[in-house]
Picture (spheres, rainbow, N blue to C red):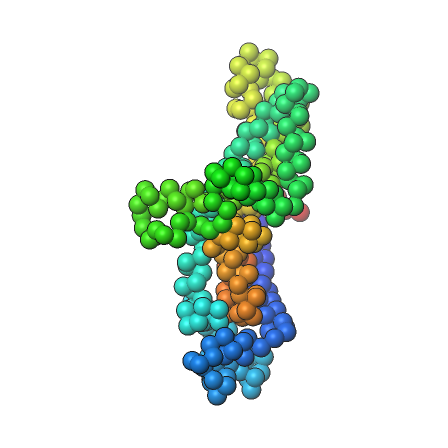
Length: 326
């Protein structure tokens, strides 16, 4: 119990620090977002509205930074993340609600596929080390070493430009109206295939290598030798004894990777013009959109913290030794 209490206190303090930094960093950036908003909406807004907009967005120059900080916490605890400059007057919560499902759907599915495929391949390579299967390691590592944006551009050049199999950008056919129909679902899958392929190719090597190394270590343990001596089938020994124990670090890493799903892959969404949370963050930074920046940072940070907490709990349950007092 003490272990879980300590971890809970740690994550509460970390969340407070993350929210505080999230409040300070956008205000330290150069530029005046209110002036940019007025310039963007010439004809609808004039300079006389500058003070009113500053107060509305919590950027009142007459208010102290402490007053702004307290007001930020008050709005945050009521679920109010403010209004977006870039999509004015749309609330930040609505912008995030529209962007988040696209990132979770794409990056989430790609992460799960990468984990499952990489873990299975790594288990097979580790169990049969020293065979031709080891050749898959340098191939997968090569794709991981290639810069992410370059791999995306190569996929576009090959599958979109040269072969014409897949669209080069977007998240669905813009001639269609979003709806829960097979046609729209097919369009989403077709447009998301290349970004998902890019994510899988660039991340699968880590899962393969991690599982392979653990399988090599575990296969020499006494309980695996005893299982062989009992006359159990190789398949049962591999999955029921070796892989079952070797997968523990993989599960912990997978729980952590789930937190980064919400953050998505900013470069991927920029390369493929995909309308996820990463694209919303890029738009916010480009337009000095403090509320949207803070909202996306907050969602990403909290998702990573929650994933870390889940990873701690899962690993503590799987391996009771981690709960022992130091």
